[in-house]
Amino acid sequence: MAERYPNIYQRARKEAGLTQEQAAERLSVSVETVKAWEQGQRVPKPEDAERMMRCYAAPWLGLAYTRATCGRLGAVPEVSPRELPAAVLALINKSTDLADDYRRLMRIAEDGIIDEAEAPDFDRIAASIQGVIQAAYEVLYAEAPESAKRERPTADTVGRSLSSSCHEDDCKTIIPQLPRIARGNRYGG
Image 1 (cartoon, rainbow, N blue to C red):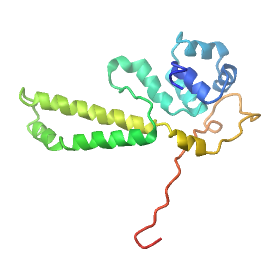
Image 2: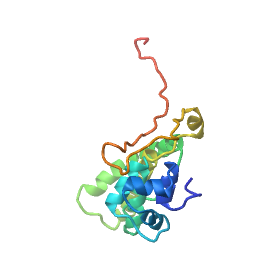
Image 3: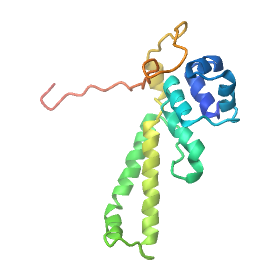
Image 4: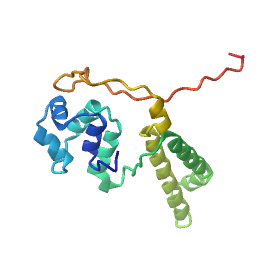
């Protein structure tokens, strides 16, 4: 979906199955405002982005908004959409690689100074930490595998009415869960 709708606000709205008119009504803004956000003519205020996250049931939009508005600061990593299994494996691999560097990081930090000899190792470890942060975000915003999407029942949303604006009580974020695998415990259950 990201390739078809490069604008994050349009993508979130389309994934929610809303028209611009429906979105404007639920967000308590004009249709022109929604269009301006989606055409990149205006940047939503943080409170507008927060309302979109709730109304569109798109928790990933908060990270995308922060990256789009503050990306030049370099504090928010680039997060690529991945399916959950791939995202989890990447996080485990990057975390394991970082674990191998803990002892070296402790040696570098013990005197409170990063000298010239330690700087290359510290820079490499810092990049590894950034990789773990990126991988963690990719797990948090992972997409369900296509096979799980096909198996999941879908609700009929046609004809459903919603209030004219999104408030705490009428916009609930629904986070789909992958089916759990039943495992027996060690006592035979």
